[in-house]
Length: 552
Ligand SMILES: Cc1ncc(COP(=O)(O)OP(=O)(O)O)c(N)n1
Ligand SMILES: Cc1nc(C(=O)O)sc1CCOP(=O)(O)O
Image 1 (cartoon, protein in one colour):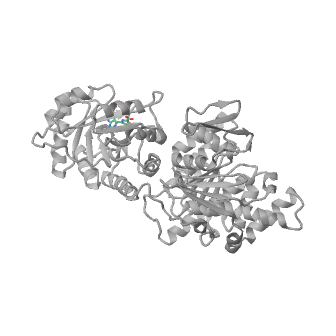
Image 2: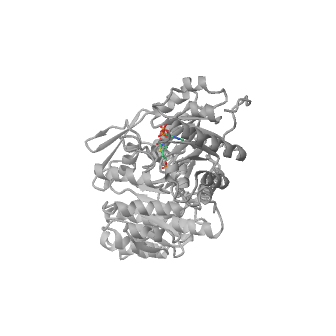
Image 3: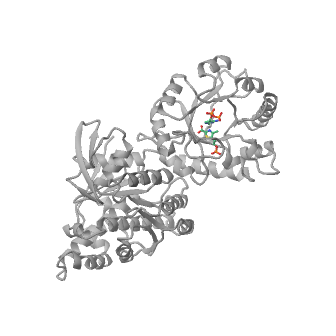
């Protein structure tokens, strides 16, 4: 341990490599791999030796410290205070069953870095009391590097976010660990942010670097993603809002023949495909998991509508690959309130990928909020959602895939809250449509009652949002806007979601006015016609828009 330093070193936790010699590819030396990883951008090293005898562990630790000193990268030792002291490392990482932090602190020099593994919020609270320097939060995902199969060990991105909430205002740093790779890093970083903007200080990885035959390139990828993400100011808006005009169709573009991939239910496939074409998009109904990687490379939007919940593998792969390629993902959790199975599926999907937009009716949005808040009681298929802050009761019923009842007492608060929690745009459909990014709420009052008399109108709304978000992201990319790798979808997705809702609801008003429309049967084809006839000017003239910006 270097005794001369009186103050704690400033540690960059961003790309934290935990070693694992057993994972090295054949022919790759430990120190060779480490050096390349450091050159690629690793900022902190932990020597983790689960099978070595003390003498071997010490030798490895000493060699690591020597190499890392010359690169000015701090070294921590997993579990063993004695090895940390003997190798003059910068500190230790302790697990829940290792030596208690106060005892470790009393043995180590005052400037030693101490990190602690946390799997629950309670662990985090204790770590704060113990004044650790940082916490390792996980496991985020399953991993072959360590046995995390015990119940509750895999926390997902939401679990990490929950633990981050506890850290707010404490100054204790945090990294996430477990199954993190360059392919899911951006999704982890984006999802693990609290409503006030508190985010991870870094990510800890083993296999993504150690098992690589090119650890320099692997570290560079992780480092680039982390830095691009960190460069985006959290809490800042990607747009400025002066009033409703900001959402009117100077911004409302017609989709320019970009691909809109649909994983949608069998009931609405034909009409959703026709609606997409009418809006200028190019639909593909593609549900197989095996084709999602190819599809995601084509610019446009990705709609995941689980109306008939049959293709879970396809939906898991679709969102994951869309995130990977920065394509907007529109999630329509049709009928999620109807069965526990659907709720579990939504939970699984949202832990695997980050939606850009969640679109649902009152029952669907209510069910999603309920699954976020454990103390929302569910009573006989009626969701009684108690807002702990306001002590009000709101009731939204779910029956089949339709919502009953009048919706929420405070829809603005609901969409804001869900958007903040899920870190995406939320569209709550109904007689008035509410759209929020967690701060701004847009209210749109267009639409016609005939929309409620045809099947799949809600699904077509999802299609319209996906078409406009897809087109917006393609245009943003073409203009070179927001091309940083740190964003999951390029372009102003709030405006695009509003544009999609306006397109369908205004088209419904125009269709209903036609002389040849006598009821739902004649309304549906007229609606497709009206979508095809829409112009930005029509939307501009007919849109009923109000915007509410939250002043924090
Ligand atoms: C950064 C980081 N976080 C968590 C762990 C896990 O530590 P622990 O719980 O002590 O388990 P083992 O690593 O000892 O198996 C870690 N090592 N690093
Ligand atoms: C060492 C470790 N600790 C974990 C925890 O959850 O506490 S997961 C883990 C292994 C992480 O390895 P990889 O990056 O290869 O998935």
